Image (cartoon, one colour):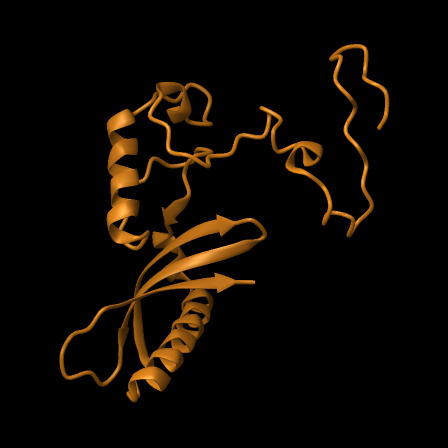
Length: 166
């Protein structure tokens, strides 16, 4: 390990080759560094509700509504989103459906979910419409929380499906 730098009295970070990440501890990788702000445990202390926008005010009741909605709906029904902050995990993507290209892509994801559902239940549903989409960045992947309507259904059924974009 390189010698400690004189300014911090802590060892300089190790440099690793690409693909050499398998045997690296979290400490070596920098995840214990306080500069990397990660939210692994819900904490109600006010400093953890700090928005990343300079000058923005804290709205703790809004955060509590947000976390409650995520817990109760498993990420599908979020109406109160605090916006850009390091603790915001799942966000409504209301403008995402304005693009026909995005809608087609999401219909493809929902269609794959329905294919799986159909094979298990002996049905033949197809995607009619995407009603709502929420999203979550998960490392290098992106998860969509889709609410959609199937075609040719005698009664109204709302499907909710989380899809991963790889």
